[in-house]
Length: 294
Ligand SMILES: [Cu+2]
Image (cartoon, rainbow, N blue to C red; front, side):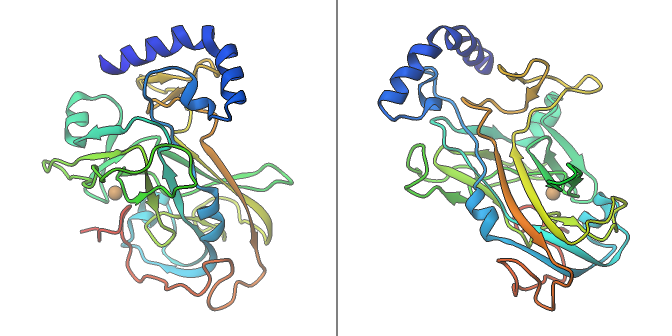
C-alpha cells in the first residue's frame, strides 16, 4: 500500500509541477531527481568510472561445476572472456528496502526466483549487461541472471545524494533462512569482476556469435525497464515509456545506464588485457557477493 501511495502522488503532482520545478532546480544547480516531488525516493545509477577501471580480457578455464557455466549454457573448457565490475549506488533520498526474499517468494510478487544452482533466491530484472558492437549494433548478453542486493560500499562525497549512514542491508538469506536485502540511500551494491557471471564469453563458447577483436561498448542498465511477459506483475510503470515496467521505484529512470568503451585484442596475453590485467584468476567461483557457492 505504501508504494501505491507514493506512486500516485508522484504521477499526479509530477506533470503539474515539472516545468516550474525544472526551472527552480536549474537555477539552484540542484539535481532534478531530488526536486520532482517531495516524497523521498530511491534513485539508482551505475558507476561508469568503476566499470572503466575494472575490466579484463583473458582466457580462463571454466569448469562444468561453475554455476555461471550451467546458467549461461557455456561449454566447459578454456574460453576467452571479458570480465567487468558493476557498482550500483543509490543516490536518492530513500532506501530501497526489500527485506527477506522468502517473504517475497511467499507473496508471489515476482521480485525473486529460485536459482537451482546457487540454492537461493535471485532478484529478477535487477541489471542488464550488454556488450555492443557500435559498428553493427550487435548485442551480446552475459550469463549472469541473479542478484542479491546489499549495502556493500558507501558512496563517495563527490557523488550526488545523501551521505551514507550506517549500513543496514547485509544478508542475502537462503531458503528458509531470512535475509535482509536492499540498498540504503548513500550506499552502493557492487558486483566485482572476479565474481560468478561477471563476464561475456567472446569465443562463441556459450552459443552466441564469436566476438571478433576490435572496439566495443559495455552497457550496464540498473533496474532496467521491461515489458512484462506471461502474467508478470508490472510493479512500477515507467512514466516516460508506456508499457514499460520496473521492479523498483525510483525518482528518475533516465539515469540508469553506464556505457564504457573496451578493446578486445587479437591476443590478450598471459595476464590478460585491460585495466584489471594481471589480477588473479580464481579457480573456483564465488557467487554474487563473494560467498562460496555450496
Ligand atoms: Cu546466487
